[in-house]
Length: 264
Image (cartoon, rainbow, N blue to C red; front, side):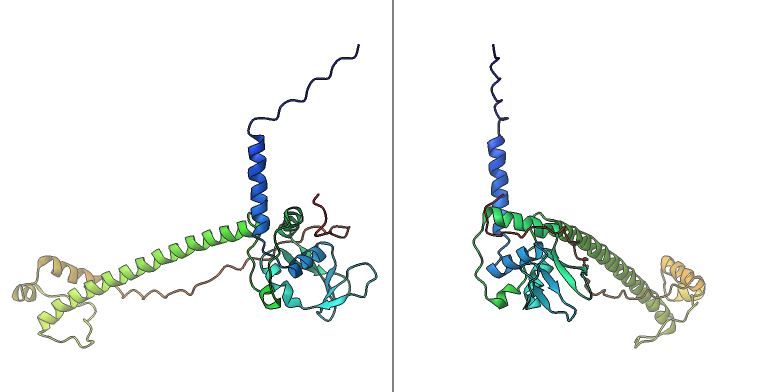
């Protein structure tokens, strides 16, 4: 007698909700791409290894083996390159370079084919405007890390600047106080750029005659023994943006990509 096979186990509780959230996240990532039809076609051609810069630096599209290829405006790649979706790879053949997709670009194409978001309506000028990197992708992650590191660096530079300014202001206040004491002893009423002589300190008679406080006399004598040079005013550093190198290319697919084909 043949034993009855056991029933399939029920899926773990909450699995459907997890899949629903996962699918919504993928749809969100696909919608955020905001590609035009031309940009989507360029991405598919690059993933299939069909875009090359020839020896003259002209971007050409080779839709199938043996095709002579036709020239494209290289400026159409700018936004896709800047978003970390495409990359110009190492030399390919005599004097040419291939345009490939990064891992982000490969994932973006998968999302685009599966969820088929509405194409953005753009003219050729809008095709060149900046695109956001893939949500949650390598480029977005490293930009966030670079931004956080840049914020930490700028905060450290601000603290260093304020500390240097505080040191300068403290020196200036002290110098003003010591100059006032010297000027009082010398009978000078207008500073007009005059500086206190290095190494000067009041005698006991001068201190008593001009009613100089003991703490001020001690400060003047300490400065006479060890003069403190004026701290340099800190320079304001120019804003610097961290330049990130391009992402590496993903492996090329042997088959022609079908951008609007059935989802796999």
